[in-house]
Image 1 (tube, rainbow, N blue to C red):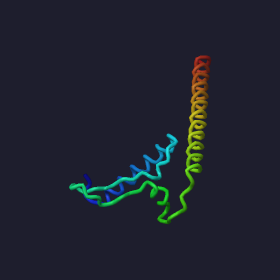
Image 2: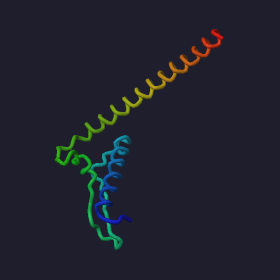
Image 3: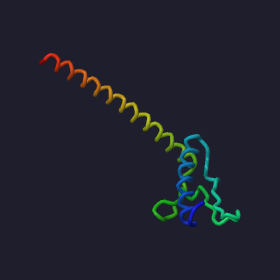
Image 4: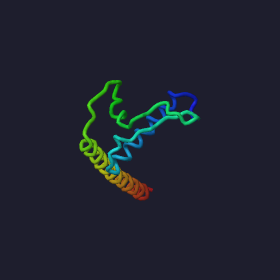
Length: 110
C-alpha cells in the first residue's frame, strides 16, 4: 500500500523498467504487459502500460524501437558485459602475479 497515487506510479514504473529488462534478457516482448494500480476497494485508479517505459525519455514521446532492435541491443549489452568480466579476470590475474613478484623480490632483498 502506498500513501498516494504518485508514489504508487513511481514504484510501478521502476518495477516495470526492471521487468522490461528481464523480459528482453529472456527473449520475450514485454510491450503488451501493464500494471494496474488499484485502491483498497479494488477499483483501478491508473493503468501503466509497459510500452510507456520506452516512451519516457526526457519527457518527450519517441517512436518505440522495434522488438528486434531492442533484442539486438540486449544481446550486445550481454556480450559487452561478458567482455568486461573477462578483462576484469585478466586484470586480477596480473595483480596477483605482480603481488607474488613483489613478495619474491622482498624475500631476495632481505
